Image 1: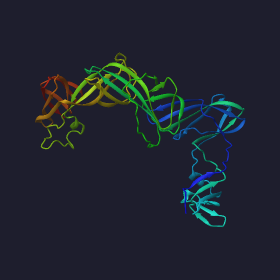
Image 2 (image 1 turned 180 degrees about the horizontal axis):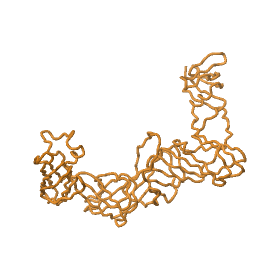
Image 3 (image 1 turned 30 degrees about the horizontal axis):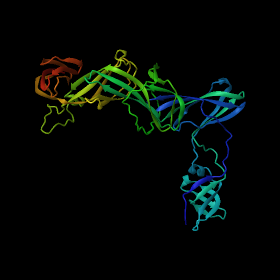
Image 4 (image 1 turned 90 degrees about the horizontal axis):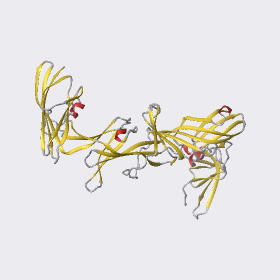
Length: 478
């Protein structure tokens, strides 16, 4: 017998008594960088005197129904909300059958000659209970019928889209302007920055982009867009949404900034100057800022005992085969770019957190990628420090050369740090070490700076194809 995949044919659809409100006249969308947004739209509603039932279908699929607010702008004191419902039982073949138990349906299949054969009966068991069962007019039970199933009417309570429904009592008839607001998950934004460093590493050009990802299940036409940057506390269950990003547009070239920034509460808002359409399942990029010729400071830092210090002191450390605990196997010299976010440096706009990709022009004028780092929310006049990578031609060696116990609670340790520069130009390197308890540098080959209670720094200048050795002794008491 020739069979076909089952599908549902609705012959008659019941109408709803509720009034479906037309689309929004305007939309305000405030997107937070924590995967949620506040939606506010203005709509025209025709109300009669007495009780009215109205429906809004074009809302986000990931709406938080507990956050919905309906407010009459025209006559707020004339409308009383009796009920508010979020209806998300959507039209689908399975849902239609699940709600049609006890109803008559017809299923049509094809016989061996390819001719249609139809049977009818009462649905006695829906798919959600383990399979479709139909009782035919002659009393037979048909299990999981194959073919085209048709019903005479649409079950009540199903909607083509997630729907908000209100039962309103109004003391006067006429058209009113109403604002509907709610929060939705599944929409977020992030900032991405591109920095282009000049030839001598003394300045850079910075461009910032907003990458907006909408997976909320709704499209926002001609929305007035505001981005909220800051750590907004929100108590809710954790949902796992797809946060993958597909970015195809190049950000190497700067575009005109389109956002006005202002402080709001303890956060910062970035409001777009023109309306924009944000479609469902769309990733959109918008220009946030541009800054040219920003002074930058490049630092090289060698922190040979950093890994030891962070694991306090030696626990779990594994080194090179044959190496000792007193000789570090870390030889990398870190490269850091420092920029001050100030008006004097052609910046000064509070920067949302995001990733900064750093490029540099080569001798042919082509841009080459040299590293990236992330920044946190950064106010004006604060510094950005970007750890972009490790130096190739500058390396360091760190070891403890001597240990002496002076008394029961006093020791002296001697250290040696070698910085080797294989470049054709001299370099400046900051040699960093970490100290503990009550300490004192009793001997040192170079000047040092006390960075904090447990960090010291030796700034050294290493000649081209040269080496500098820093030696120092620290007395520690506890």
